[in-house]
Length: 355
Length: 251
Image 1 (cartoon, rainbow over the protein chains, first blue to last red):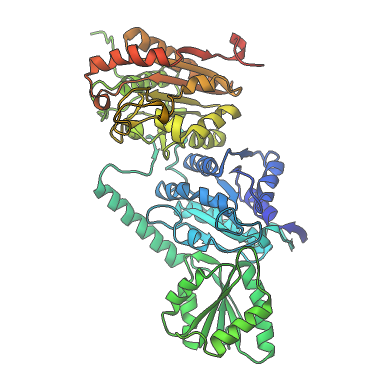
Image 2 (image 1 turned 180 degrees about the vertical axis):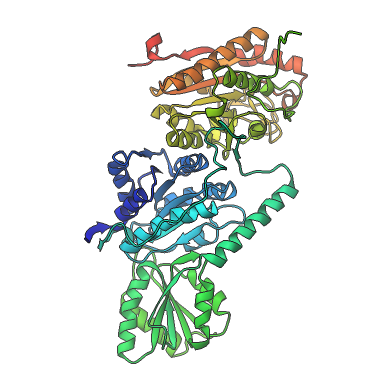
């Protein structure tokens, strides 16, 4: 039976259903329903809601719990996510599984409370120091948030890597009909024999992120590089809409993909053969899926709630074989479908953007 | 032949990297002995800091999680909340616990986290080569206070004195290891801190005045004398807060 639920609450409920029994976070709009839901439900589920003194502390509580083998998550919004970047670098290096939800709001600085997707670079390029990437999943509906949240925990455990849910403020705040438990089937996971949870009956474990020699440092980085290559090979996700006969394609994720769907309907009614390529994994970016469409697409257009961030990955994937345009709104504003249609006509149909 | 002394099972066989005359070795041994005597090696998770003790995962026989600089208490909080039946301790220097990690330390105390922090105060940043610490004494010369710390650089922070005011802190002690009697008292305080955690009474914190002959530019013997004549008069010593049933606390 379908129930009406807010995106943020759906993430929290899905996490509890996925076996998460510890949530460490700090309230920040527009993600606060995640800690609020956890505070209300975690105790009944036999778990713990722990309010940290800051996002800096929250990410390291996640680090400690994850290192000790627990299924743990945090949820925050852009300024708080910035504070977590050091911790994410450490989580990657210490190979600690965890799930973080970033419900994005306007920036830079304190910004505003409206939705954006302007954390894209920070999310996908490794926002902290060193060479690393978390897996980044971008749902476009509240139902998809449930499935991806559950899957995020399994992916984190499989790769011993942080997994981030990239959600804009609209998706976090909007209510949609959803069904639990959703469609995701839990995977069989390896035992956490590496965890630092007391060494009774086994040799001691250390979960650390540093090395005493540069040689060891390079060896670790090469090993992590192989792991990232494995994730890139196996975890690219995307969805397509109306692309089979398309001559033009939009690329958009989250809320902007849903507005773009309306723009596609409008253009199709004018006879323009256009479709949507929707990345679900922002990292790894679904290069292979996008490139399969490159031979048939005469012009691409990235629609984002930012100044143009994902468009760089689209250009890299298209690699000069067709023009790539961009349209976005910023600071908490969202585009009307008419704006997208107009920008598409100017940049792509009228040749405003060259390859 | 009767064994009268043996290396504790709470430590590994690794040779430490600590400088001659540094008291980290003594403090490590005390913790190792306590883990062994309380029979908790196998159920303890230690959290290593960034600083001179940042490689202590090689020395303690229990599981260790390596934290970022200043974040040890937050890391320990996560581990303890995930596994309330485990014994969790942090081992931190003065820069880690009293400067970059001050918010984490005070907040964990305020929440009454049931874990133990061991705070090694040698009044200087050792690992980075002798820069000014939050505990550097006025007049003390370091690499970043080359003419001596003056009041424009602020005053040395007496962290245990501060924590003794925090309700969630169940046990706060400030000890030294500059002579055999002090070492015995330090061990007693450390043991009590672990016991307070096992009894679930709240946060326990033991500050230990320590030496850094290398960065102080003195001999090991002079370093111990410097602890006695310079540090002990400035920093509050003794049990600064004891659990409520012993007459402490605000309850």
